[in-house]
Length: 263
Image (tube, rainbow, N blue to C red; front, top):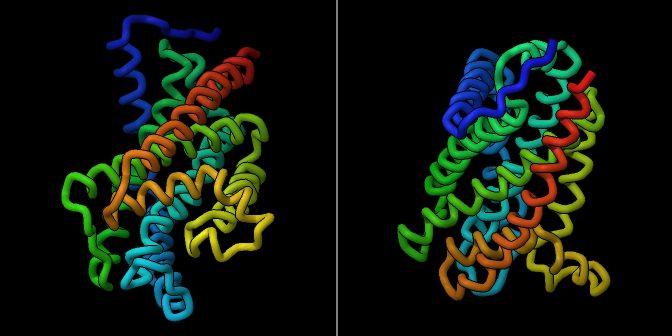
């Protein structure tokens, strides 16, 4: 028998907190997940800085690490979010979702708890990358408030990525396919954006797409918060993209989850 709780908001928050704790506990207990969450972001920072830093000289920036690290924030979070789809698909494949169905809890708590755990993981990843970046020359040039805003914006795009990949995991229902599909979706968007090089250096036909790419919009906003300069327009554009993505993916993912667990 399926039991669903749609009680007051306090019960929903408690359900989400329980699922979040479960996912964080699993992260701590599985060494490969910890390695993925720590080693990969550090590799991104070091490899892209030292392999491309001598060849790429963006205008108005003294060091490449100052230019590229805001982009690596999004890169690491996007790649990490692909594991959200893997985890959802794995819970479906192993029958864990069936156990959740039998509990007196809101169905949306399963997805919300997953994305909340991802947000906490992303906060750790961002702190790690900022620490490593600082050791090799990165600096926030616009003050503490802008730095905190940059972290908050990076976490917000991470939440959007998590919901997108959660929906992907529900659609494919296979962990391996969810992992591959997540990376195949993220890689083209990342490398056709301003993550590593200015959009102006790309071919004209690609520039048109790159300027509309939500990754470009978000990276440019993060870059403005980190380096200084006009921030209002790029930040609002990034928030508009994030809000639009969440507006579409959250109800779609919850509806898909309900249909998946209806039988």
